[in-house]
Amino acid sequence: MHIEEQRWAPLSSSVTPASGGNHPVPEGVGREFGLPGPYGANELPVAIGNSAGQSPPAGRYFLHLARSFTEFASYSFFDSAEVVNFAGGWLYGPTVGEEKPGRPIDLTHSYQGQQLSPTLVAYSMISVANSGPAARKWWWSAGPDGATAAQLTDVINGKAWSAGKFKKDNIKKKLVALSRNKLDGTFRFILNEWKGEAWWWGHGASIANITSVIKGEAGADFRKDGIEKRLVLLKRHAPGNWTFIMVPRDGLGWAWYPKIQLDQLISKAQANKHRVIASSPWALPDPQLGSIHETLEDPVSAVTVQNT
Image: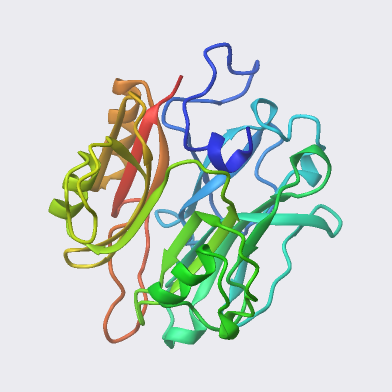
């Protein structure tokens, strides 16, 4: 199973933490303060929870899995994953290790203590190795322009988006990461090739809309389909305005929290024997500065799934 799907799914019941490791702890939350870089010999960062990099109580944290339980078990630590920060408009080619081919698996806008224009918002990104048995097709919005919802839909359906340097290729794609700019509403995204599996995404949704869609009922632009779903991404764009990705529930235990403190989230995940699979700041940018001062004490929006 590729890491993009594994990070959102329960782990095999045969998986047990390696001696001396802290994974896969039910909460699946690891913390790092200071500069980005190697995360830990036994850990693979798979999603960004908070991109703030200041000193405690602010700090960067990731959601992670044990590397030995992933498709990168046979890869060296330095050639398996990398975390980077970069500014808007910089065309960045994902690499790992000593400039070896990589692919991005998560990205998020970052609004940290500085006045930023919508086109100069910084980003944090996780890339993983994209060579050998773990390689797969991928696409992302690497150019200076974010996409509108219509442009993103075109790209997903294999159509052209000239400003984003996407040519028509007729290849159906699926979202594996999505971040909406809270200053201008455009999207940054990462895509993999679609293999026919069910998935859904939406934006501008209310909590009531999302609740209806989860139940398979009609909500916003979604028709009633009777399919129970679960969230795998939930991000607050504005008051009453949410962006999400869903997959079929398939009978799995899971939970979602539009607003919760991080310590409460971890406690609930442990009590439910869940793992956190998505977490993002609940706060919105200051309208004057265009920034968010993210700390580990601020509420988050999060999703969990049964750990095994």
